[in-house]
Image 1 (cartoon, helix red, strand yellow):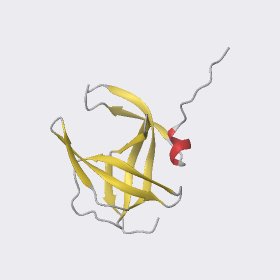
Image 2 (tube, helix red, strand yellow):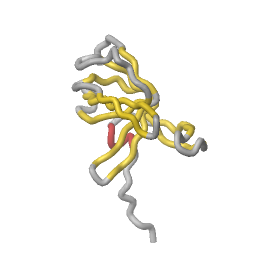
Image 3 (cartoon, one colour):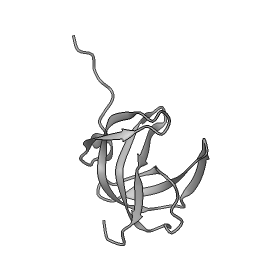
Image 4 (cartoon, helix red, strand yellow):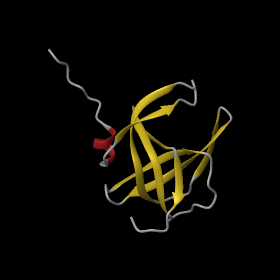
Length: 117
Protein backbone atom coordinates (compact mmCIF):
# COMPACT_ATOMS: atom_id res chain seq x y z
CA UNK A 1 0.00 0.00 0.00
CA UNK A 2 1.26 3.49 -0.89
CA UNK A 3 0.89 6.25 1.69
CA UNK A 4 -0.41 9.67 0.61
CA UNK A 5 2.21 12.39 0.09
CA UNK A 6 1.30 15.82 1.44
CA UNK A 7 4.46 17.48 0.14
CA UNK A 8 3.77 19.33 -3.07
CA UNK A 9 6.31 20.44 -5.64
CA UNK A 10 7.70 23.98 -5.82
CA UNK A 11 6.21 24.29 -9.31
CA UNK A 12 2.74 23.64 -7.86
CA UNK A 13 3.23 26.20 -5.08
CA UNK A 14 4.70 29.10 -7.10
CA UNK A 15 3.01 28.20 -10.43
CA UNK A 16 6.17 28.24 -12.57
CA UNK A 17 8.06 25.32 -14.17
CA UNK A 18 11.11 24.00 -12.32
CA UNK A 19 14.19 22.01 -13.18
CA UNK A 20 16.60 19.92 -11.12
CA UNK A 21 19.82 21.75 -10.22
CA UNK A 22 22.86 21.01 -8.07
CA UNK A 23 23.56 23.40 -5.20
CA UNK A 24 26.13 23.51 -2.42
CA UNK A 25 24.96 23.84 1.18
CA UNK A 26 26.17 27.00 2.96
CA UNK A 27 26.18 25.08 6.25
CA UNK A 28 27.86 21.80 5.29
CA UNK A 29 29.57 22.57 1.98
CA UNK A 30 28.06 19.40 0.47
CA UNK A 31 26.33 19.17 -2.90
CA UNK A 32 22.64 18.35 -3.11
CA UNK A 33 19.93 18.16 -5.79
CA UNK A 34 16.84 20.34 -5.63
CA UNK A 35 14.16 21.70 -7.90
CA UNK A 36 14.44 25.38 -8.82
CA UNK A 37 12.78 28.02 -10.96
CA UNK A 38 15.68 29.13 -13.15
CA UNK A 39 14.40 32.70 -13.71
CA UNK A 40 11.51 34.53 -12.08
CA UNK A 41 10.43 38.07 -13.02
CA UNK A 42 8.68 39.85 -10.14
CA UNK A 43 8.06 43.31 -8.64
CA UNK A 44 9.35 44.55 -5.27
CA UNK A 45 6.37 45.56 -3.14
CA UNK A 46 8.01 46.62 0.11
CA UNK A 47 11.23 47.64 1.78
CA UNK A 48 14.06 45.08 1.60
CA UNK A 49 15.23 43.95 5.04
CA UNK A 50 18.87 43.08 5.73
CA UNK A 51 19.51 40.18 8.10
CA UNK A 52 22.72 38.85 9.62
CA UNK A 53 22.86 35.21 10.71
CA UNK A 54 26.03 33.25 11.45
CA UNK A 55 28.10 36.17 10.03
CA UNK A 56 26.29 35.85 6.67
CA UNK A 57 24.47 38.90 5.30
CA UNK A 58 21.22 38.22 3.44
CA UNK A 59 18.38 40.43 2.29
CA UNK A 60 14.69 39.57 2.45
CA UNK A 61 12.66 41.08 -0.39
CA UNK A 62 8.85 41.36 -0.33
CA UNK A 63 7.74 40.53 -3.89
CA UNK A 64 4.67 40.27 -6.10
CA UNK A 65 4.51 37.79 -8.96
CA UNK A 66 1.91 39.24 -11.35
CA UNK A 67 1.77 36.11 -13.54
CA UNK A 68 1.01 33.73 -10.67
CA UNK A 69 -0.83 36.44 -8.66
CA UNK A 70 1.19 35.65 -5.52
CA UNK A 71 2.89 37.82 -2.89
CA UNK A 72 5.59 36.47 -0.60
CA UNK A 73 9.09 37.16 0.74
CA UNK A 74 12.27 35.76 -0.72
CA UNK A 75 15.79 35.74 0.71
CA UNK A 76 18.92 36.43 -1.35
CA UNK A 77 22.48 36.21 -0.02
CA UNK A 78 24.21 39.60 0.05
CA UNK A 79 22.63 42.97 -0.43
CA UNK A 80 21.68 45.26 -3.30
CA UNK A 81 21.09 48.78 -1.99
CA UNK A 82 19.87 50.04 -5.38
CA UNK A 83 16.61 48.06 -5.28
CA UNK A 84 13.52 49.83 -3.96
CA UNK A 85 9.73 49.51 -3.94
CA UNK A 86 8.33 49.12 -7.45
CA UNK A 87 11.50 47.82 -9.10
CA UNK A 88 11.01 45.02 -11.61
CA UNK A 89 13.59 42.38 -10.77
CA UNK A 90 14.87 39.04 -12.03
CA UNK A 91 15.47 36.29 -9.47
CA UNK A 92 17.69 33.36 -10.47
CA UNK A 93 17.50 29.76 -9.19
CA UNK A 94 14.53 30.18 -6.86
CA UNK A 95 14.19 27.32 -4.36
CA UNK A 96 11.90 26.81 -1.40
CA UNK A 97 10.22 24.48 1.00
CA UNK A 98 7.40 24.13 3.47
CA UNK A 99 7.35 25.29 7.08
CA UNK A 100 4.71 25.18 9.81
CA UNK A 101 3.74 28.76 8.94
CA UNK A 102 3.70 28.43 5.14
CA UNK A 103 7.01 28.28 3.32
CA UNK A 104 10.49 29.67 2.77
CA UNK A 105 11.94 30.89 -0.52
CA UNK A 106 15.49 31.77 -1.55
CA UNK A 107 17.21 32.84 -4.77
CA UNK A 108 20.85 32.78 -5.84
CA UNK A 109 20.72 36.35 -7.15
CA UNK A 110 18.52 39.37 -7.82
CA UNK A 111 18.93 42.08 -10.44
CA UNK A 112 16.99 45.14 -11.57
CA UNK A 113 15.48 44.54 -15.01
CA UNK A 114 13.52 47.71 -15.82
CA UNK A 115 11.18 45.63 -17.94
CA UNK A 116 7.53 44.79 -17.60
CA UNK A 117 6.72 41.38 -16.19
